[in-house]
Image (cartoon, rainbow, N blue to C red; front, side, top):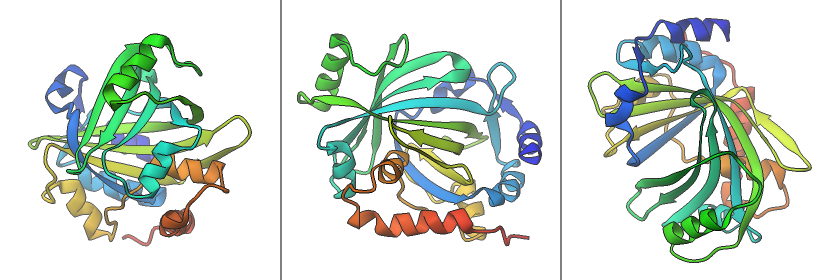
Length: 254
């Protein structure tokens, strides 16, 4: 990790205020997952095209998230069953910036991810009346939800130097509920965020060069599977095999 931090420090920095033009609250997301052993090679190739978000001198930022779902796991099952116009609800603390939000993500039938959020004082296991009303308004109907699991990770955010594109890399991922915990610490989940999906992304080109292809993957769904092995998962079997293979993979890139 020391070499990784050194490479990240060699990128040009970009501030939070300079990122205003690439917030991309309505966007297309293209995800990738790869063994962390590839990270050094990928970062060395990215430096020419991207800058790195820096807040108070830090370039790797910790995120703490508490996800909510219904008793029947509607949000998980909507994703598992391939339903469009599906939601995810979470509290997220952006540790480095001291900000915490209640966030609702919608994946619509056009493949767009739309994120709505309100600022809150802190993460809590229970929703206030105001927060519940906000969820009902955004989702479009009243849902009874409760806290299901924590997902924590460290993120590096890259901003393309010339294109309207953000790239995030999440690593050191851990998750837990009240009775169990797990991690994907040796896997990096990268996400290219664009106004409209374009394969001209330099990260996508670099990933393809070393045989890392896009994959539809959800940190919430994967952690739900690990924490609740009895849950319906037949449509995720290939993803589980993929993740297990990544855990054992070694970097053969030169």
